[in-house]
Image 1 (cartoon, rainbow, N blue to C red):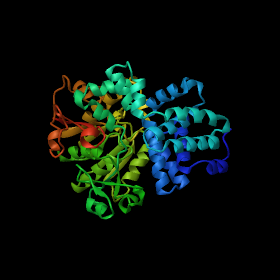
Image 2: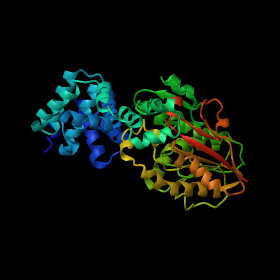
Image 3: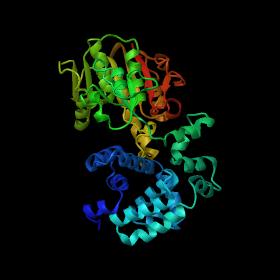
Image 4: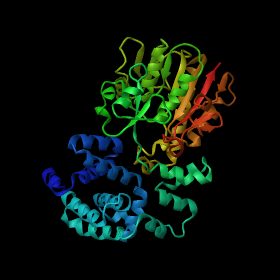
Length: 452
């Protein structure tokens, strides 16, 4: 039985307790790591130092989980399935403190034992103590060297960088061999929080005046530390949190030459790209329409657009992009930011690499193709479609575009990277492919297609 809240808070360090509770929620309720942690930090009202510690402990543990599990099994001399799931999570948190956070060994063991007593019960503290003492006896590199003996090159890289082997293989198919490990390692870094100002509502200078730092690529971006909700422009809906790569793919669509007319975001939730597109459309006097099939995601889009006047020049619909609620060939610019595996956002979604399976790529393929075909059908002659994914995987990116364009007249694949000449080393044939290790962004993919 879990001890009552009062005794738990008295018996455990508050930052470690938040990390443990968040990890349990991710593993028992399939919670999304970023959402779970944000809610718990808000509810527990930790100080800045404890919140930063909890964030690194929780997020890092989620990212490195697969390798930590191998180390725990070796140190315990038994399989994880023989251990209570909550005990496994305690050991994972202890492993991350010892092997990645440079917490002193004695503090790692004693604090995790205290956390175990406060959350699971004193009966497990002896086991926690014994296993963690063995884990702290070696460094991360020493563990990888020992456990990786005899492994092939890619299996060893999988262990060292804490990525499932199928993701290592997918990256190896896309990148030069000398970039592979660098790219995988970049997924294990904590990205800075990036903001995007809403066009026409704020500018980057305002963010810089409030303490933000200039971003690298996007003219609408700045990076911050701390709670973005405390930034006035964010609180007022004049800016929002958005990865710089997400901003850049939308910027490419705004820069391309296209027929005049309304703009459409086909699968708009949660609304970051919609907030940019809506602003650019307003600047040109064009209508902006956003659609998403899920009611709660459509509500998020409305929230993202709340800073703009409610003057009839923006419309948000709960609508399925594969069965459009709008007439065909009605839009000049159409964004199809399709559901994908999320392999491009492994920095920000630390748990996702261990949840996804290679079969999920094939499962999403028909939907991605249907959404691109629907986007093309929604675009007027002279208009442009942007096909976008937050994944570098070939089957989710170029393969979809090539399948849809094959044997069809009246479609022209444009040179997307040429529209962002300031972004170096992002060209993939006629596509745009961003990478965390090259650009400091999510691994966003974009293809622009002109309809004749």
